[in-house]
Image 1: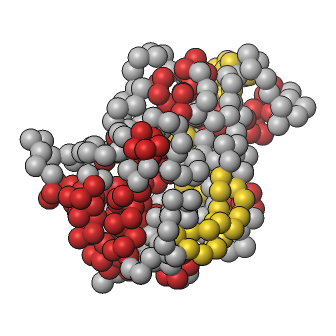
Image 2 (image 1 turned 135 degrees about the horizontal axis):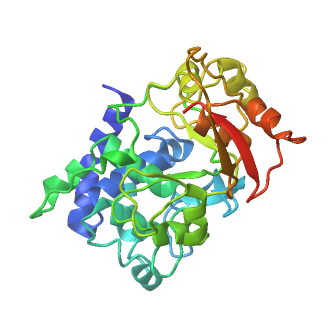
Length: 358
């Protein structure tokens, strides 16, 4: 049995009891416990039986201890601090306290009111991150997507369906996860994953351009411009949207190798390793790779193929690497065709001649 299966087997009964006793959705309990504790292998979960990273607030009267933790600021900066956390006798005690956490004080009852009794796992996840009093459970900017990814990858929504008598069974939003597998294939130990700030967002059920723009502190018009959308009122589940004006990144999924990623972005293995400072070909699931500025390698075209010359207008968020990939050309070809002195500087509204191979 894999360590992930073993972890979920150990906490399933407690997660279901959390719904029975506190009306906290079992899938949310399981996914938070997995993510916060690294599937029961973090220092906090081993030494303190604390699966959820709950700190020792003033109302806590039990045991407590100091542990390292990472906090992420709104600008994406991550710092490591020492904080005082709650300690428990068992994982079951940790799960029980997680259930009472949301209603233990009047302030929490108000702040997390939308968590209690919510039967839809996506809404439940959003309720802990965009609560009524605007005090989020976690500082991780990608916490929402990570929790949903765990729920769907390990089919934790089936726990919900076991205990909640629904007229309609909630099925997973398949588009949320690029590739779902029974368990992550990672070497021991699992490396510390550092959030560098994501620039892309995959649309899930219930999303609107307004809600996505608000969540990323940008305007709808900016979101439309960055993504070249023709209709402000239409997006569909699974759409991948640019939500930050920064370096483009790719998140490693199950089955990826550097070679496969190089083929996906029409570049070389050495280019990916160089720009990301990789010493060998080892990569990890959910590792974030910089793909901005990669050398684009174009496959030779048949002699009969004639590139189509187009005039491209630079939009906000554009870079030569992104434009080159879109039209199947190299950055060098764009530079030569337009007599650019500095390939790292283009401006919004600038006209570029591109000999497109698409």
